[in-house]
Image 1 (cartoon, rainbow, N blue to C red):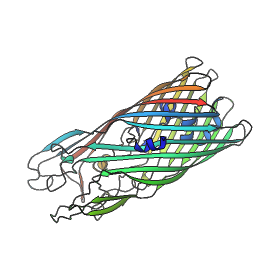
Image 2 (image 1 turned 45 degrees about the vertical axis):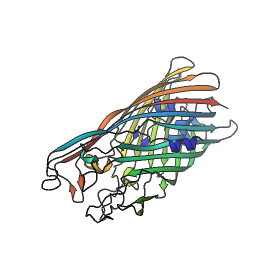
Image 3 (image 1 turned 90 degrees about the vertical axis):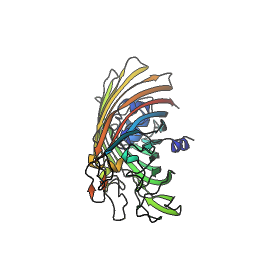
Length: 433
C-alpha cells in the first residue's frame, strides 16, 4: 500500500538537483548526514547500508516509518525584446512572470533492520521515494515562454512536468570484526515521468503550416530500473566512526509515450532518463554524554547519466537532454540530548547548482536549483519500544537565468529565469520488535 501511495505522490521538490537530500524525519533533521554516523535505520539504509552495523544499542530490531510533506514555491519569468525573432516579431518588448500551480506533495518511507545478536549477518529492507521534480504552468500571454507555440506565440504554451522515483532496497551486511561492517543492496526502482510539451522528441508539422510543434501529453508513463549499493562502515572504540558508500546509476528502460500530432493522429516517442551514481564519504563522533555530530561529502554524477549528459538540439529539432553538471554535496548535522528521552536535531547542507545559467531555457520543466538547506527537529523516546520524531527543513530560494536557445545557439535580446524555494515537514514513528 505504501508503494502504491508513493507512486501516486506528487514530485519531490526539496533536493540536491533531483536527489532527495535526506530520508525520514531523523535523517532530514540532521541535514541528511548518514554515511559515517549511524543514528537510525532509515538514513543508514539509504546512504550507507553498512552503517546498520553501527546502530546504537536498542535499534538492532527496528521498524521505522516516515511521512514527509513538501511545499514548493516555483516561478518562471521571461522577457523578449522587440525584433528578437526577426523584423517586427515581436512588435514590442514583452515580459512577464508566472507561478507554478504545483501543490503540496507527500512522500512515505518505511525501513526495517534485523541484526541478530548471535550472528555476524545483518539484514534490512527499505522502501522510499528518492527523487523527483515537477512544475505546472498555465498559458500566459504576458509571459513569452508561456505563450503558445508558433505561429500564434513564441513559447511552449502551458508547461507541466512530473517525475517521481520509488526504490525498494533489500540489504545484507556482515560484521567482519568488532569495528568493520560491509554491505550490499540491490535496488528495484519504479520511475514515472510526464513532460508536456515533450521537447525530447522531434516537433511535427502534420498540418503543413510550416511551424512544427512539440507534442502535448500530460500523461505520466512508467519505467523499471535496476541498480545496487555498496558500503563499508567503521566504528571505533573512542567514539569516532567513518563510512564510504557507492550507489550505482539506476539503469531504466525507456519511458514510452503515445500522443497526438497536429492533426490528431497518433505518434509515439520515447526518452531515456536514468538516475546518477552517488559516491559518499562520511565521518562522525559520539560523545560519552550522548551528543553526536557527523559530516558527509557526496559526488552526484549527473554529467555521465543518460538524459542529463547532453545539450542542445538534435538535427531533427529534439532537445537532447537537460545537460546537468555533476555536483558535490556537503552536509553536517548532529543531535543533542536534553534528557534521556528527548533529543534535539540540527543540520545544514550545501550543493553546487547542476543547472548552468546558459541552460535555463532547457530546464524550465525541471528547475532543481536549490543549493542551501537548513533543518531542525527532535526525536522523543515515547516508551521503551516506541520513538516519535519530527523535522522541519527549509530550502533557500535560488534562481537560474539565461537566454532563449535556438538551433543556432542563444537568441539575443531574450531571457528566461526560474526560481525555487521549498519548505518541508517530516513525521516519523519507529518501534522495536
